[in-house]
Length: 143
Image 1 (tube, rainbow, N blue to C red):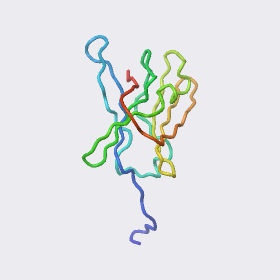
Image 2 (image 1 turned 90 degrees about the vertical axis):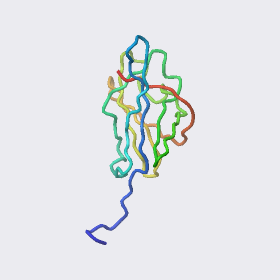
Image 3 (image 1 turned 45 degrees about the vertical axis):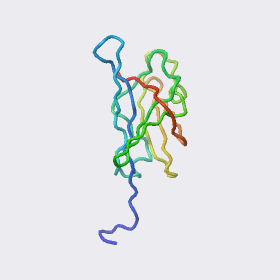
Image 4 (image 1 turned 60 degrees about the vertical axis):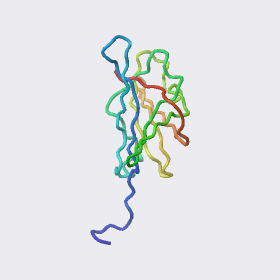
């Protein structure tokens, strides 16, 4: 093969976003923000280790019962999915007050998507496979 390439290069087939909420201009107002996490064309070999958002997240007061929303964009289509797992199920040490987490995603050798939550208090990471994506909005909050 030309240039010494001997195998196919596998790339991410979609853009992936995580929906978070950030404070608005009015007291108690929150604005939805879709943060890009993975980009179409990224080499899958680079995604076997977690690819983290550049921002830490916090859990809202009373939040966490619903699953977070991710968006997957392929071509001109953008679909929303609510994860089957609640936010609390995804986060290690969610009971620590004022805790923050780094959220990342990876793609396994089996091409399944995983979400990672790295706790900033104990520096423990929790990896959760996402075999099914379904649903409606829930939330992380960005501060």
